[in-house]
Amino acid sequence: QVQLVQSGAEVKKPGASMKVSCHVSGYTFTNYFIQWVRQAPGQGLEWMGWMNPDSGDTHSVQKFQGRVTMTRDTSSSTAYMELTGLKSDDTAVYYCARGNCNGDCFDFWGQGALVTVSS
Amino acid sequence: QTVVTQEPSLTVSPGGTVTLTCASSTGAVTSGYYPNWFQQKLGQAPRALIYGTSKKHSWTPARFSGSLLGGKAALTLSGVQPEDEAEYYCLVYDGSAWVFGGGTKVTVL
Picture 1 (cartoon, each protein chain N blue to C red):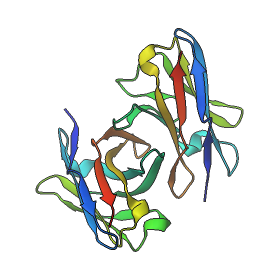
Picture 2 (cartoon, one colour):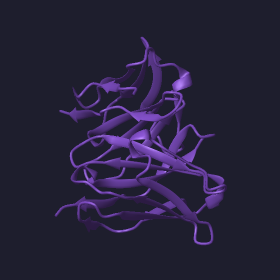
Picture 3 (cartoon, each protein chain N blue to C red):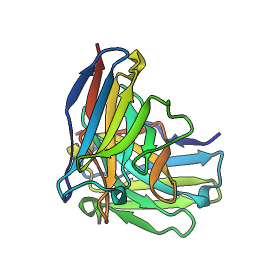
Picture 4 (cartoon, one colour):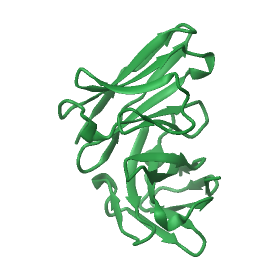
């Protein structure tokens, strides 16, 4: 069965960097995009960007450009999302999701990784 | 930047019907926005329900349906069950980015 399993919770200081992993199983990693979404405490969902695990191509929302890097390790079927220059309002649960339906849906989701930014 | 608006909250009786809507600040939502709907319960990851306006995933209960209604994307829950109490998010593609709505809290009472 399709599964996306993310890394655990982290606490980071302002200005530091975070890197969340997303290990997939149950399908061919390079056949489907990975989408990244975050959710601040008590808030709604916010799309961050996508990565094509086959080519390594990425695209992120303008507000994160320059701070976000999406990478992958095809040998371990794992996607990574790194965010630098952390601020307190980057405190959120970060989700990875599989992009499917010819790019028109996010069908399977990871369990989320809570990153807390606090001094 | 596109803003997507949903009703903040709706209440429905068990067995009843409720329709949630999803509007875009750029104009009418059409099938070209590829509307998606997700259900999220407290402490859980979102679960995909609807994509491409009205298409269901294999796990989507039959009582959930998607449509376009008056220039908005819509999610209708028919024969609501207590377990349908949750937050529901729409997601649309504005031509350059995916944008989530703010979510609708559905209470079954």
